[in-house]
Image (cartoon, rainbow, N blue to C red):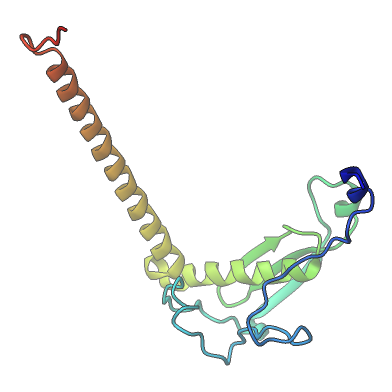
Length: 172
């Protein structure tokens, strides 16, 4: 039998998924819900930040308006753009990032939460602190890159000067 006969009828394709040991295929992996506690390994990459202020649904006015922008009839004739207004502060957020009304509602609430936090806490808000930390990290990276460049220049100059030292010609 030739080798080409082996490839004429390929074996059925299967997908192998890693499953934790002892877990049956009919069981689902446990998901973290708000009431469960994360182990130190799961929470290792998460920073301990205070959460944003929660919004009271009674203080919000929500409207659905027609979309805008590219996409033609699919976006311009459907009312999936969410306009969310926080009555006590007067902040208005308009969100039309996706075609889904539910996703736009969630995104609008998240954006409004951040804006309300900035409105009430100012420079001490979570968003402003994260911006300052990001800027600080960026400055540190720039400083390290500049120091590395200076070290490379110095090393190159030393190498060039040692290469041009008179009296140390290697002649065979």
